[in-house]
Length: 126
Ligand SMILES: *[C@@H]1O[C@H](CO)[C@@H](O)[C@H](O)[C@H]1NC(C)=O
Image (cartoon, rainbow, N blue to C red; front, side, top):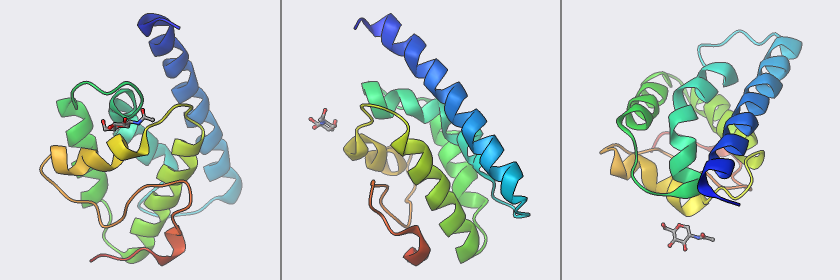
């Protein structure tokens, strides 16, 4: 698959992920600062780096920082962790090594590592 085709399918994937997460959120009607819709929106610009590599865009770094700043409580952090984990699982060919490099590349730190089997109910601020 060419790079352009890959970007197009990536965009469609992201739209689908956003829709899935939106439904999930509405079904459960959870009232929290952190929602998967917001997390998807903030981290959307990071997906191309996670899949294709290259350079981390300033938009991605802004999103990462905003999403971290929005985590005021451990519940927020766990919610966000779960949103990221569920969202990441729907993105084919996502390179988790690169995903976990993003906070450092943006000059910040994330209290947990994103992986397919991270237990989000146990993450804490460190
Ligand atoms: C994932 O990214 C890392 C860091 O860029 C790279 O070293 C590794 O080869 C990549 N893994 C795959 C499966 O592409």
